[in-house]
Amino acid sequence: MIILPAIDLKGGKCVRLRQGRADDVTIYGDDPAAQARDWRSQGGQELHVVDLDGAFAGTPRHAEVIASIIEAFGGPVEVGGGIRDMNALRRVLEAGATRAIIGSAALENPAFLAAAVEEFGDGIAVGIDARNGFVQTRGWVETTTVKATELASAVAKAGVKTIIYTDTATDGMLGGPNLSQMAAICDAAPTCQITASGGVSSPYDVQNLKALGRANLRAAIVGKALYDGKTTLADMNIAAL
Image (cartoon, rainbow, N blue to C red):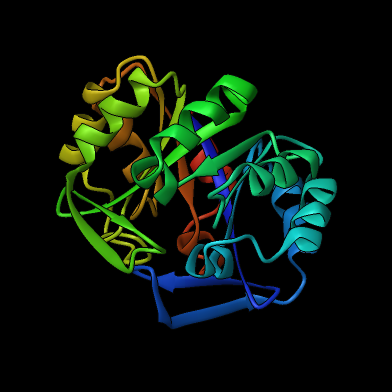
């Protein structure tokens, strides 16, 4: 399993939101590129970046910052947040992102997702954010009646190869991931590589994810626990071996 440290961007700064709420934000630094270099020096193999302002606005807002992060990290970087049309998608990939993460638009605009997969193939990932098993969109502001497992199955059939699943109820809470839902997502999209996000905050959590025994559970994203010093990237990497 691969551990991806996270950089969430809001107002040009590195932040973390509690359960995705824009009004419950903690600022961790004002130099995202420096943070990217730091994660790389600590053993980061890949990096997960989210443009939170873009997610709420519906269009990316941190193009220059993201380009600097990608350059500073010097390894694979996946980027999401407000990617809802081909122009936004191309800008992210042209900035050097390894994967562009399509979130709300994967549910709301299947034709866009299909076109993106046809043109960019493995460069496309889908981010599925859910609470109590139901998909949330628009920066987690809206909860739909669509089950996360149903969307996972649909995007897999559309040819998507990477799904990033975030359990929004556990995100930023340091209480561990939703293991049963993680297993269900893996089972719903067996042809996809799955990345777990939300609540992954200790080596024990990584071990529990591995214990699910799902061969397609490829990675886990860790944010707040690293920023708060609850664990280290080195320890998480060891647990992921």
